[in-house]
Image 1 (cartoon, one colour):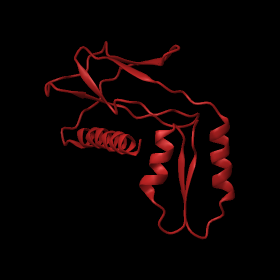
Image 2: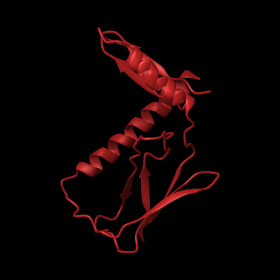
Image 3: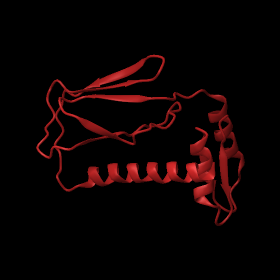
Image 4: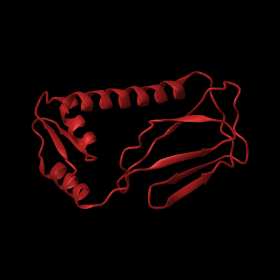
Amino acid sequence: TRIFSFGLGHSPSRSLVKGLARATNGRFVFIPPNTSVDIHVGEQLQKALQSCITNIQVKWHLGANVMSAPTKIPPVYANNRLIVYALANNPTFVFGHNSSVELCNDRSRLGDAKIDCIPNVSMNGTIARLAAKALILELQHSKSSSTCS
């Protein structure tokens, strides 16, 4: 069962609204005060009626061991983005022209992407911080859902 939650008013409990949706593979939306709820309810209803892809696994073919962040991929709905980071332990790791990323779930292979243009990697730590934030959020949500059971 998926739950699609709404945060209404001036100060809804953001962690409750988000946590409820995340724990059930649903979606959440926050509606500002003095805003019509019709559009938001319609969008949530559309999401509730469409299927989503779950149990996604990311297979990194990079020539080195990497860790995915987040480790548990959230459900993906049509026209939504999915961001997954690869964290390499080796600071001297570089992408090769034979690198690729494969997405699959327990039923089938969903697609793959070949890395044919080597990105210009900045060493300022922004990507590492974003990946760390994704892991921290995942740990927070797993901890809060285990204490609620």
